[in-house]
Structure formats: C-alpha cells, structure tokens
Image (cartoon, rainbow, N blue to C red; front, side, top):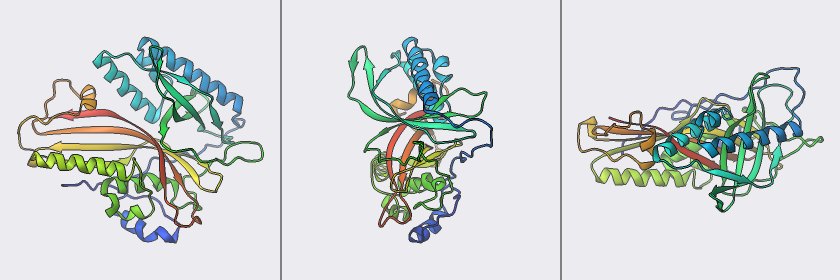
Length: 344
C-alpha cells in the first residue's frame, strides 16, 4: 500500500513521557485547526438563559427546515464543520428522494464557559432520537457545539458528535460556569492544538505509529485504521492502489476543563481517501462508494483512473492531565459525513 505523508506538525508537547513520540510525529503531523482566541470586548459574560434561548431557536429553525426540505434555511443556522456536513446531507437526501430526518431531543445539559469576548460558545449534551414518521429510534447521547463569532452574527450550531462512551464530569467555577481551556494549555498530556494530529497519526499508521503510546484504542483511532487497512487490502487484491489521510480543518476548536484537570477537546478533521489504477492508467471503472455518489463533483463522472472521496468529521476527545499515570487521549464522540467526491 502506498501511503500519503503530507503533514506539518504544530505545537510543543510539555510532558516528558511523550516527548520522544512527538519528535517522530513532527515529521508527519497534521496541521491543526486555527485556535479559538477570544477578542477583547465589552460584551457581558454569556448567561445560561442566553444559551438556552440560542439552543431552542436552533432546534425550531432546524426542524422547520427539515419538515419542508429547505436546505437554505438549514444552512442559515449552522457554521463550520456542521455547515459542511448539513450541505452534503441535504444534497444526498434530495438526490435519493429521501425526506430529511427530524429529531426529538431529551433534557439538555448546558456547559457555558465564562467568556467576556468573542467568539462566544457553549456546549450542550443531550439525548437525541430520529423521528421517522412517528417511529423513534433509540436515543443517542449527542454533543452539540454552538458558536457566535461577533455581535453581528447569530448563534449557530458549529459541530455535533455522538458519544460512544459516557461524558466525564466537567469542571465548574464558583459561579457555576464551565471552565474554558486554551489550545496551548501546557498542563495536559498533549497541547489541545495537537490532539487531532496525534489521533491522525494512529488512524494513518495504527499501532506502528509512535502516537499509539499516547492515544487510546477505539472506533475512531485503531478501529478507523483497521477499517481503512482492510479496505486497502481489498482494493490491492483487485489490482488497485488505496490511500487515506486524516488531516486538520480550517475551523476553530474548543476545550472545556474536566473535573480531574484534563480537557474535553472538540475539533473537526478531514479524512481523504483515494482509490486509483497504478500510475493513474486508464482501466475498468472503479466503484464509487454509495455514500459518495450524491456528492460527486459532476453526477456523470466515472472513475476510469481514480476516485477521490473527502469525509468531514467532528470529534470530541478527552486530553488527560499531564500528571495522570499511564493516561492516554481518548476519542469519545464522532460524526462523519462524505462531503465531496471526484472520479476521473
């Protein structure tokens, strides 16, 4: 298997226990998303009632858009990773003639950091059910990240991810606010701005990567590597070449302090996958994954040389405190959608 190596590493890792691994990762690191740095402002600290109102306003607008399949209305209340995913989902559903799913939400838990500047943001943890004509799916615990860039912007859903393990307790200050964490916080196992790159190294190389020493196994780390490696073996058996690369996105990431001194980190990533005939020579059409067909650059494209698919993910990971013995980064939530494809 030919494998891509197009990363640039950013950031310094403080923990001596992982310094050697980071030195190697520097050769293949994924450029992290731009940090969310607050701009000095006279705006008041974000209040819980404001967050609750923003959340309810989003639910109302999103459901109204889903009820009539209005993509523009749906896109008006999302941003960042969520905008990219929603656009692709509406396009795919329209292509297939499938109604847009509607959701029912349980009791939300709000985590509102005490920010006196912009961007403003808060997190909601809530059970969510898909409503298919009155038939409800089993509830899934979902994280929903809301942001507002400045005073002229509306509150928008920036990213959402489904938890595959319990959300650990988050810290609160004496006034009950969640505690914001800098993307360069040195008290953690890894600086938050390199958590995505560290996860990516394991997704690309599996347990052979030095990053495996500081990243826990799971569906979105070693599991995602195993799935991609299996696909590579399958394509190689057909005489094709298969490559994949998990890399950063140009969107801010956000962090909250956990009760044990670690951090919950929320960030987006791209997964790029390419299947091609050797040397890009013309050959029999390469099958296009079903999830990617609706997002082809042109609907009549045929992969006689190659097929490229981009997936956009939102992840949530726990970055433990640097002092925790034998601790590893744990990716605890994800949501991924095929957002672009091209066949040539």
